[in-house]
Image (tube, rainbow, N blue to C red):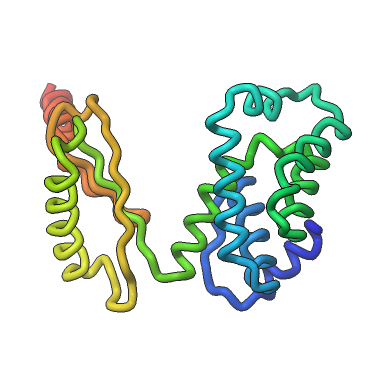
Length: 205
């Protein structure tokens, strides 16, 4: 399975950038195989469901992170996870992870696979981080729409790309916002301004 995946990763038709790290390599291989076999949307959805199950269940998560887990136990766990997927390629992929003792990478592989799928569809992920949640969905959506318009009219996006918004909360920002557009970050937080001031003061000493 992994050799086939790597072969497709180098010869497959999709022009997406491989992501760094072990999880990025596995995600890229799974992406190319699933695309080649025309099961990409199903694979993305099914792996996301499996990942959600793992991250929401501490018992399973602890089991995955147990280095002493035997191969038989890992393969049994994979079988229980993939039985309902009816996706041979995903099942084989999970078996490969089990054999290589990489099951604990599933959540990050899932994150990377979604990034690749978005990239393939021309979707740019935009993350807006604020110090506290928006008081209402209406206000959040209003600000999101205004930012979407500004980003689409900028040089950051091409005409054939669309935006997928994600929202995060980080009280440590103190105020302001941080906007992540693909691999670019626009830091308009109070914390950033304080750090810039501290650096400036240190330089003057």
